[in-house]
Image (cartoon, rainbow, N blue to C red; front, side, top):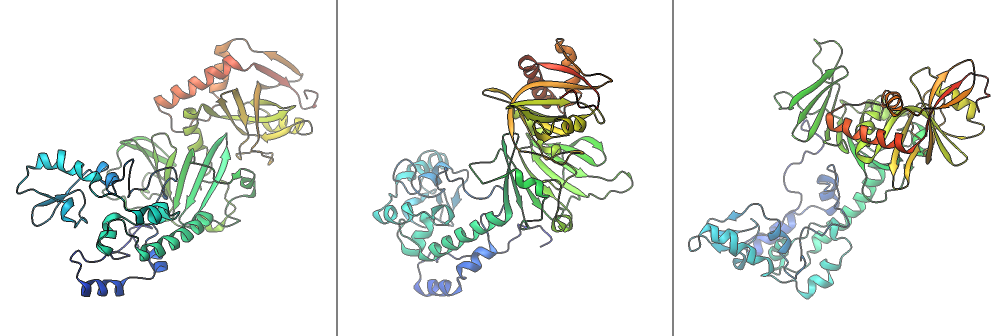
Length: 463
């Protein structure tokens, strides 16, 4: 268990003997576990990114033709040689017709010519078409032609034991997805959150329910929570590119590795560990315990002080920016009020809340779509707790200027607008590619959306 949540020991189900010996096979059948126990020990859908894409073909079975092993052969990256010099694309293959004698055939010829020719050697029979090939449990089943051959000496045959495991796997997977996976919609993007521990109604702050959606296709951004820290001693974590508490960040290959560090340089403990892909669209988040998760009422889906460390990093690739701003929808038009802390972002929202739908008073997402820029609400609020997942076409950007008067001035100088806007863009881990994406979005926004200096007092007349 100390190795982590995905540990497993031994085989959870047993295929029959290659020799076909009736006595051995009867003994193996008697040792087979109950299907529910098999799934309990080896949940094939639990590892991160789990579950086969329903639009993807099954890993076993015919491809475009009728060959039962066509996918196996097409995907081969290795080979198996038995004690008699028989070469095949799979170590489980026991049919002599699917092995090439290396004592009589050079390896290059066997690899380049003979193995590819095996793709269509065993054709799918009528039983496959009627049963496994047409079964709606196929995505949850471990059936493979080699197992069918070992079970029945028929590559197309159904294996009743695997059918029962598949049904249990489907039931258990659906329960797992219901309790361990949630989807949210923010900035026009679908965010998928998975957890080793089941979610409860109280896990996250109630505001997140406004953004929660049903699963509908693949997620744009996804991450998974684990509740034990991996063993880091002696591991190559790549090249460190940033160190400033609370994070030390390293780059290894196409992965970004975050270690949560303490401000005391003599304290070498790691309080959080995260691994994300290049674009921060897929990640794993490791917490030392589940105490915080179990306590509930969390203000961040990522169990961090803010989700913007992930969202702000990923958004430019989707044509968006995370901005220090408040936002409202007024008459169907999205309005963005940009400024630093104490600039009046919450004040302007309070002034306008009787006339407009409040999106958020502290952090807003702007994102370019086919019909131009839109403004999106977020859950990262400040003084005003009202938030909304709504969005609207962005019709104006206002730079807040506290004053003793109320007036609006169009800012025509693009350089001035860019300076004010970029200083309010939420900057996570920044790299050259992130800046290039952010600048491209900002420059397009300035060209398309009118920007103003908004001078206002607290009288409310600016409304």
